[in-house]
Image (cartoon, rainbow, N blue to C red):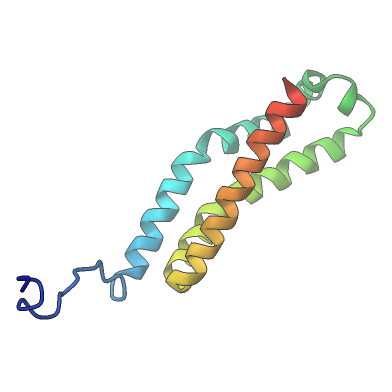
Length: 121
């Protein structure tokens, strides 16, 4: 007879996030803020300096100055809101919902990388 059957039920140790979900949300928001710091500063720089419109060549040459600045301010506000949205999502959503959203994001990133390799290079 094996020794496994005599040992009794196996107890699993898991990480219980119930009481500390707010701290995990704040930590995820902080990590997101660090990751988007450079795109945030670049979008603010594009929005505030009028000569940057010429950097994008023909695509934005026909756009108005106000439209160009409005576009980059919207991008900057979206980047600024992202850490708060991520932190709130981690703190308030269930584990299953977070796993589903994480899976969708991973599949989307893989598709973007594959499509970029196919069409750009």
